[in-house]
Image 1 (tube, rainbow, N blue to C red):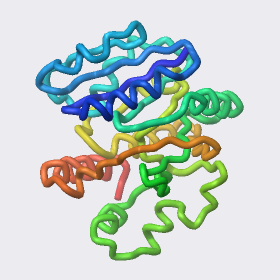
Image 2 (image 1 turned 135 degrees about the horizontal axis):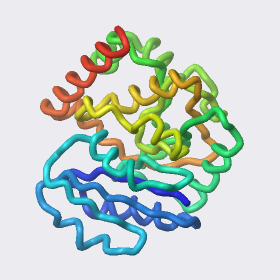
Image 3 (image 1 turned 60 degrees about the horizontal axis):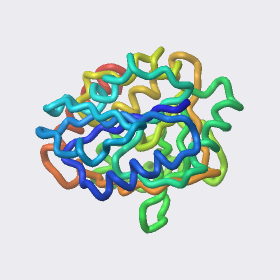
Length: 245
């Protein structure tokens, strides 16, 4: 049994349908939770399927808090944190489950992630420093970005990075619940880096598994929108206050 949750906020319907269809094609018993932070529930009528539960929040409560709404609902073996702009084939999740089952030390696994152009997305990251976040915006040191994104490693092989950018995080459900999900103090951004630090404290690992791949549109909203940039900055300050600079 696998469950998944997608947090919605004014999503493009056609893009979201492709993501939902990708998950529903998985040849396993499954349940998908669509948690809608939009101001209206217009998406509800498009996903009336037995394997989909639509949860209308009615206001934007943030990414992590919305995902946490299903903590008391999921009784699966595996739970997928999924972005609404991801496409993947039916064999991806079964192969990732095998990778999880073969490693008792791993809490979640992520596949290789590609842009629609087939260019690599460097989702593996080292624990961020304050300079790393500034450097990603201003491109002060290219070599530091390469190091921070594990680009100097062989990303065609599995590895255990410090954290993984969270567009597709397949958890062992028991671990996700024991972590109490995401820290709800982050409205948007840095939740993935934070939960990876929490996993490290439990002496477990996260796994990057490039034997299978997904496609992620990755909007990079905080680099284009001042409001999203301020959310990112606020989350960064909370992260470094919690974990140190």
